[in-house]
Length: 198
Image 1 (spheres, rainbow, N blue to C red):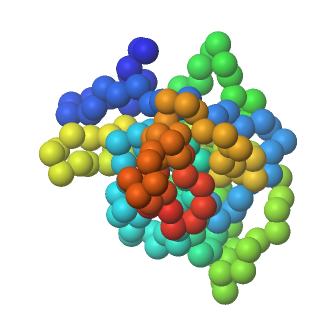
Image 2 (cartoon, one colour):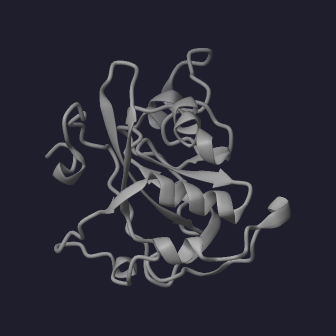
């Protein structure tokens, strides 16, 4: 494979090709106002992800596959703070596979102007995404104890960011399913629900 996206690499960054590609959302998908979708997690665990988002009060992690997950928050304001605080640049659009949802202006600053802070933690009603809300953004890299940096990309999660019915045969999720009883790890890459470990 071609290795990690050159736009995400820099000094000390790991050149690792994610098992699963980024999923490009359609323009008419419904945004989840209290969840962020993250890609590039092949070398990270649930604990690593919770630590990465710790400053913004994450509630749980929903694994999609070895490379992606949704991080849920208790209110919309925390979600917006995390997206704005961790995003450092827009991901250049792949001309061969353009993202229809990313053609709108960047909505980062506009999102922070929203006065609704989701008080009480009640789930917000589903609604069409704000312009630019589903644009992929380059995020601050995750720093491993070795000093190696893991390149990540983030965007608002949508109702279509779901765990597949069957795992990629090459994934750690598939390996955990096929492992002898008693040898399986809890959760695993590509695991789905909240609070699953890897």
